[in-house]
Image (cartoon, rainbow, N blue to C red; front, side, top):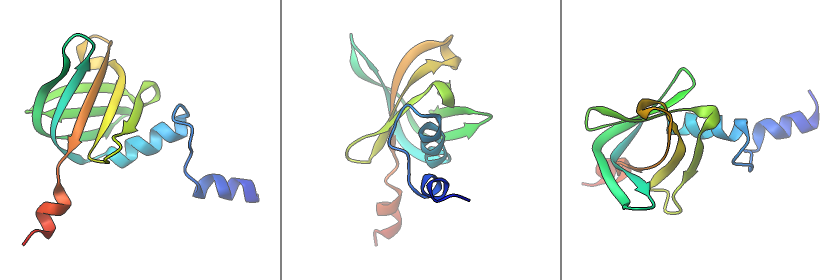
Length: 120
């Protein structure tokens, strides 16, 4: 195994449009609990579309479940994933397979799991 190949395995990719970056981000988000999620639109701004849910990765699709419904489902290859600067959530942009392939931007805010566990 060459030195460059080992470096590629150890160092995370910086190109957010690469398939490898998208796969790693989706794996990181898999089974992540969320407090609530909202949809961003130019006309309305941010609108809450669900509370209490989770993000799942299944068969090459990232699925956001909230309020007992699938609020967003997109293929990982066509998805743009970026975490909020505060690391309290994630922004997902892509063609939503659940809503007829419409381009949507969803913001999912993580459950504050660590504070709940460590709080005494």
